[in-house]
Image 1 (tube, one colour):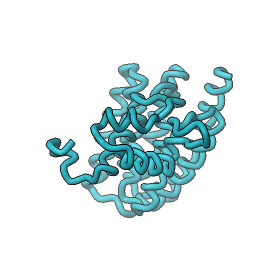
Image 2: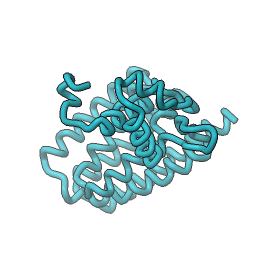
Image 3: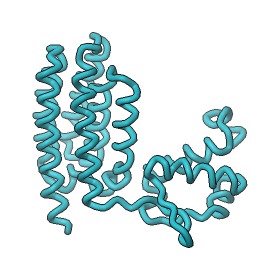
Length: 223
């Protein structure tokens, strides 16, 4: 750790937090996995104390559950929790879009256009998991000028279900849904480019309802 430039200025606790967070979000530590202090400490070359502190931080993020007599485990996300979290996140996104539109510049709009084109290409390729990443990037760039506290809340709710969505992407569960999402994205980006905050927020709200309905159908088929 000490010789890695990426982590040189982090405390041991911060290093443990970011590395374990990465492993959870990348699926290296799957949902339900027991997180044993000594095992994690040995793996990361640390003592137990920073690992314990990092797990508390990850519990705060909703990525780790701690139970008496069972210890810490990677949070398991139920279908109902997926729906609830996506619903909340996308309401926050409606607000973020409304706040972001008047703050966009020609430069930020250009990045949005590039992301829209990349998402279109990825959707056309049929790469469901690639499209999930492109979709998130597009949303983040559309909402980038919104207040930081709002974007932080959106990011936190997105990451709470990101691990499950990496393994169970809507775009792999529902064939053709990526192209439908792209049509909605085009409508949204058009309103953002016109700097029409009301129209953009309305487009985002319709996108939210469509996304939730698709998730309800997909999850019902899995029950």
